[in-house]
Length: 186
Image (cartoon, rainbow, N blue to C red):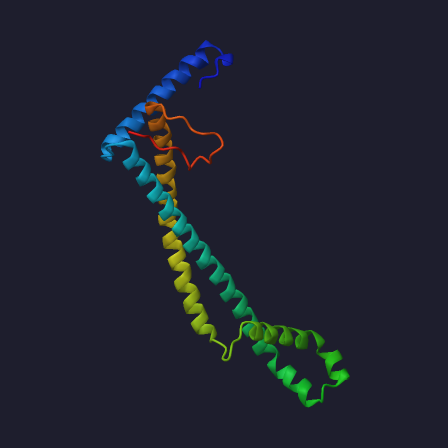
């Protein structure tokens, strides 16, 4: 809809702009061999689902990366404070020893608690965690580059879909979400 409150010049510009966008959409549809609306709408939905799947994959990788970072921190803290905690046990859990090394003992107990929560029988090596982290990070970066391109393509397809619906005179139900538009009955 053109806002005629803005004057004749704006109205003229808006009509030309809309005509150019419609023309671009028609060219896009012909270049990509979409024969009908249903076929195009299905292609848009498939691309969106693929985009959502890739997004979920990236989020899963990010979650695991943060888990690895926390686990590495706990392993390092545990290793650094292990001798102090052994000394604390050998002192018979002396209050004096505890007062002298309280910060290190608290860090050691926190690391041990984290390992117990993760139900780790054997601590993974920092080297193995660094390797997994590097692999996940490179995978995430590759997926993110592909995801960004796919997201841009989906955005373009949605614009062309909207123009296609305008050409066909398909009305969007305002109560529905934008991605849940009514299909054309033929």
